[in-house]
Length: 66
Image (cartoon, rainbow, N blue to C red; front, side, top):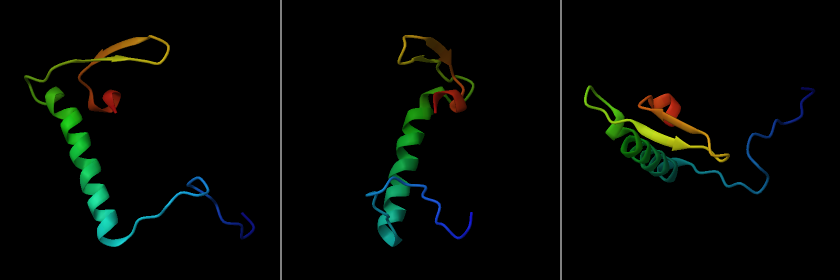
């Protein structure tokens, strides 16, 4: 840790601030909400997730879906 910066983002990534950052966060929240909405509540539907190697998971857990 000797004073060296810790890079979290890839080099060449852009950083958003102010209103642009707020707008991007709102858009991301809406997308996540639309993704999870059908699986919420007592009448929530199950989702079938297929992994990159063909493994299948059926769930209505928001944590698993994300």
